[in-house]
Length: 402
Figure (cartoon, rainbow, N blue to C red):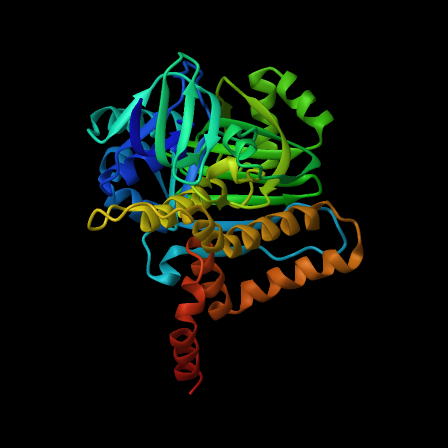
């Protein structure tokens, strides 16, 4: 029976990045997941903290040619409600950055990661799936579908919302759904996007355009399930006109590309993110609607934390309670992001006047107070970054006032 320091089930974006990070931290890693030919047409917006982590792993230079810079993000109230919020622009230059982050096609990202996994001598890729998992006090034993059995000092579940690792560890989940569906597509446009991402707040949810390289953008359009059926049934020419109309022709003529997809919106959070010799990352731990660019950025913070806990230091063995330590580290970040995305989404759906007033007032304040806007931008990029900068931001405001 082969033994590894760490076994990871699931080879999506989170699973492969975790394998690479831990292998380069000195751990011998088994990555267990069957290969797939399915194309992923979605894109992922990675914020500055995530980009810096990928750069430390030596991956960013290979990903960057396929990515588009996000330098400005603007929110436009696209509702017809009595209380409408002002347009708010967040510019990365306000916080000393060339970009908040970058938007990357998942297919390009997965290609770079798969190549890096193949080249990493500390990773053994097992092209099969786990059939049974036994979690003991001293080690974890995994029986694979091809009959092989392996053992590991630690097991990471990166195996999605229906995680087998989570079930084997006896960890429950809280899940809920929304009366919404996200229509996801890429489109070309006749005008340059100028590295500006625009989010229209509509009565059915956000309509979010995010730049891609060249005169192309990705779009997440949150609508009712019935509207999603109608939109995805349209010929591409008719859908292109609908997108252009919703965008108020800001990017000129629109040409929607093939492979339009629809995803029902739901969220889930595991009751714990680790215990004993097990940790959960990515959608095995937390699942989000595609709002606010939180999904993979939160997963990368899972991986950063795990790498700090599990890296090989002076041949130190992996602690029997490493999973519990990971759980304590991740709770505040995951719960706060889950709550903020949920509240934002529900505020758009609500017809309750006080909630509409609170949302409009909040955007009014952000549009008018640069110091507060700067704090929000920094926190969006990296938890704690805005609060760390608060003293210097306040001091700068006082100096200007004086």
